[in-house]
Length: 97
Image 1 (tube, rainbow, N blue to C red):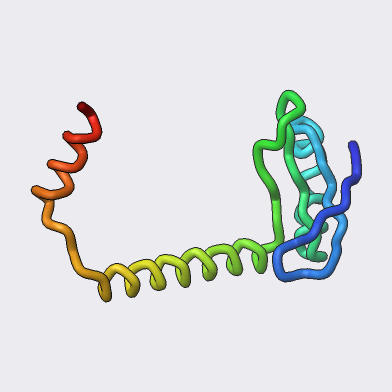
Image 2 (cartoon, rainbow, N blue to C red):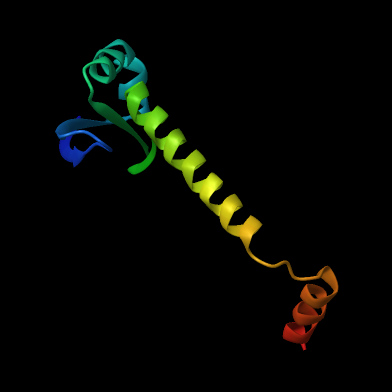
């Protein structure tokens, strides 16, 4: 097990533990306790980070940011003029030549 420090989204500096997938399975209850306390656990496989076990607040904040960004993009597109599909296809075909 190695310990690294990271910045949690929307939180002050917290400690993130990095575990192999085998260590994570063996210490799942500790990872749950860490998440409840506001800390994250990064899971690695073959030395590469493959996932993270994070507090629900972090996940909810990420979902909210994604939703806000999607709403912003929809509003932006709604206010802009549209391009006919024929023009898009013609431009695409020109690029292929």
